[in-house]
Image 1 (cartoon, rainbow, N blue to C red):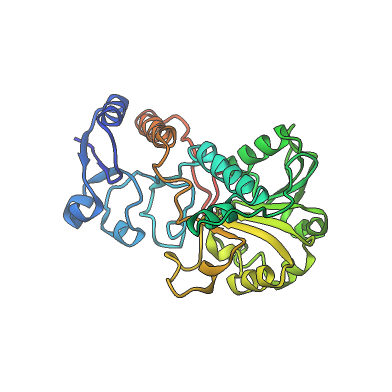
Image 2 (cartoon, one colour; image 1 turned 45 degrees about the horizontal axis):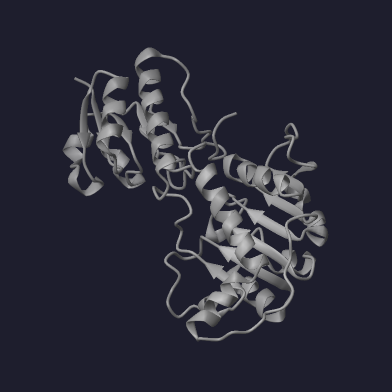
Length: 318
């Protein structure tokens, strides 16, 4: 019988959904509980098993990631011959866009500073605040996450400029869409720059000293994609000099952020430990399992897969 290894957390309800999708033997175990001998018999894997361990797979037909990012899986020779790689794009937009909105409002209304004061028993007015209404929001990465964030800030009255890797149709919530090579020309007018980019050579330090120098004074920067997209020393300089008004990051380089990093001590930097996605929101978890179940059905029936990954780009194929 075909064997499906599920190496991500699942509930009893999730197990039911998966088992109803295809006739197979399901093995629910953490990655360290699965031996290479067992992997040799895997027909499908659900969850982010280490890319290095895929060499043990002899008959793998489907690798279903529980992440939208595909770091490490698209390198030459990693995926077994004939296996399909699918990601979880579409699962995280709700949770992460709401996290971004929470960070943005916290920084705009200086709630992080008032929280710091509360810890010190200080009652002090921190002065003027900003509003999303009428602001210009530049979104780098207009996939599921960036798109969901764009919808939310548009609904709150923002002017939205979207930046995409390739030209495409402009969504209703965006006022303008352009491609990555042109993003810097929009930095001087952006009140808010929101990043949800994957970790690729093309996105490494896309926000560097030059980009910070182009930004509107007092702008707010958000990053929920990959920490490598921002030069962190340049970020520290921009915040300490006042060039950048405030920043919220859910990702760092490296992760975890070292305890001696100077970023921890910056008043206008809000840091969360890469928790905007994951399984923190039940709906995210459910969406991942639904995608996996649908792809198991597709593997059995020969129907098209959901979220098949383009190895050349690391993104979901359009």
